[in-house]
Length: 210
Picture 1 (cartoon, rainbow, N blue to C red):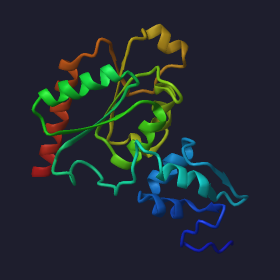
Picture 2 (cartoon, rainbow, N blue to C red):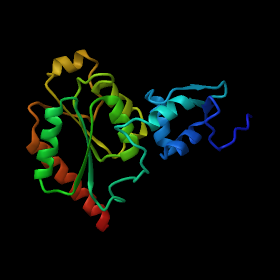
Picture 3 (cartoon, rainbow, N blue to C red):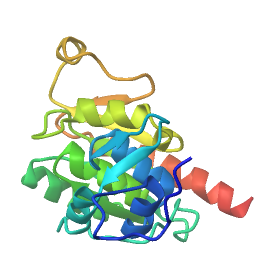
């Protein structure tokens, strides 16, 4: 079996998944998600081991919208605060989301992404409790992003809500969405989203007190 050192070197063209995770300051599970979704460029050896492009690791490290952060795990480690990730390419809607969620007066931290690619990066780094996503976005759209998450272990423990202007027939014509993904129609139903956030916070509080 090939013996590959754990230490990361910029002089090498490829590195292991573990080395990439250490360099990016994320968990091995996060690095695997980014490989599977194509965020990190990789190939597999005949033995099935991933080899990741060092250039793609460096590129991800210097993405302005997603600075390298230490993983904080679930909201249990975050003082019980709920983490919400909003994936939406309309800047006006992003501002509306932030303003409305702030007006709820709930212990919530909000992160935003403008496309599926950015959202997947932030899912790995922030591990949100709730994702609210549009479907039609540039680059990687909501369909591909949601399917990628559902096929990975990151779907466990994370609620996914799609807020879209597309009707049911249009969604089905694009291949549909995985089971368990809630679909709400635009305009954004903030009352429903608030009720969902409150239920998630109540569940989190029970876990903390238990």
